Length: 505
Image (tube, rainbow, N blue to C red):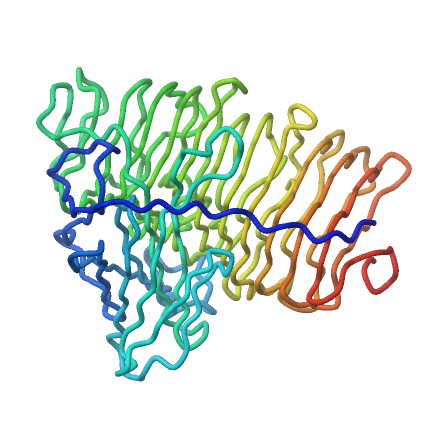
């Protein structure tokens, strides 16, 4: 065991002149300033918070939306798959683009003063200032840049939760995105303008769907995706329904992007179970991509994706979600994929580390689970890796863990007969709320033939010690766990330095 303190990552700051842009302005990423979006026609603003942003010269209002945990009903969309523990909880959010330093102001609209404010993840280092009248809070956001060696010049999002007066039933999130590249113009050649209330065509001579401002309803069944086509949902558009017809809908080169919303509020959990409705996202094929979208009230597993070609992976970047229902797992790659800068607030497992995975990379995730079930990340739920040594999860922040499982962040739930996990790295994970009464890392193997090998957990820090760090159980004559390494693990004020009962079961 090692006990070495590592230096914190660097923060790159870019200072520049600024100007506010709107959706009709040039979409080039060389523009300096911020871009805000108008209110979405047909969507009511948040009743809990209002927000605005300052680019150094002018205050600009931000359209702030909210979603509320549903109440279980006798029939209909919310008749099944409802966690009553989250009924009535709310999550508000706003989104904008920036490449200059900005100041964000959040005003509380409900009764009661702002007594305390914490901005999570803590690793972002954002310091709130409460106003004298205790009705609003301000904080500054600097442009943030990727730290991996190949993308030092690439700006990445700052997606944060603003916790006012503790984690209450009223939460606020701010999604500050880089400028999206290659935005289409609605009147450009090859662009089909999808109008609210009009079902879009599946095929045609168009290159790009542009979802115009307002609310769109795709119905219960997902819109099929086509190879090479682009589907643009700007920040003033809201789409009810899903994209991609399933694992067999291969759409090489398809791209779904924008800062708009995809919502499952009109789809029932039981309808997905009975296959009379589809999940929100199936994105399969080489060079496919998903970027910028906020997903609201997913009815089931949220993002299914992947490429069969490791050299042409599916790329998922800067996606966010607020979901309330059971089985709202996050991202499951079937094959190869890269997922960066994901803000995951839902009620089940965040992402699958190795199950059905070929070459996968997960970096800069924020994990948030309420008083329900699931783990931040799961090795496998019976499925096997495709190739060994090709799974890396790094630079993540777990900000809330109220799970009924009381603590499990990383879970090896089981492997099917003859299946295996071999070669996984999880590193640089920061846990702000480790939960209680259950291990942070839990590894289980059934007795039938299977194997779990060559796993590295490195530089994992929990702000407090819940007293039940790690659990490794199961196995049999043909079921083997071997070469699992725990390196630089810190729980509260102590390092994990041995395999004593204090640390391991």
